[in-house]
Amino acid sequence: MKDIQISKILRYMRTHDGITQQDCYQNNMGTRLPARISDLEKRGYDFDRSWERSENSRYMRYRLKEEENDNTGKIAEGTERA
Image (cartoon, rainbow, N blue to C red; front, side, top):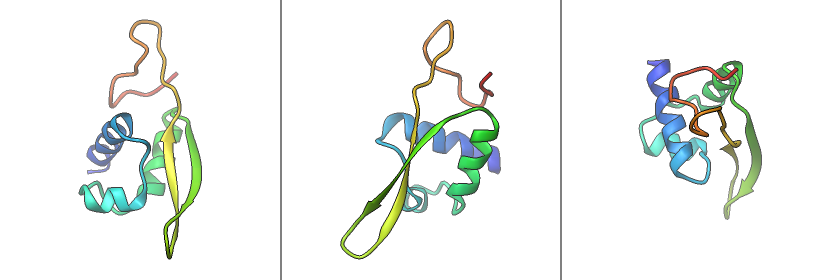
């Protein structure tokens, strides 16, 4: 289950301007975004974090930093970074 959530989160981040906890709730990607981000960091991914505000709340947005490898400029989903 965790690996499925991680794959969904990576796919979402690559096609959107980052991800928030609310994005995860609304798109059925689980309820533990900070834990999944930590799992991804252990696999070698880097993230930018920024606090954002709405009218009555504050939340964290995670953005995937540039991904590169020797061949395609992208790292295949589900693989670890060197």
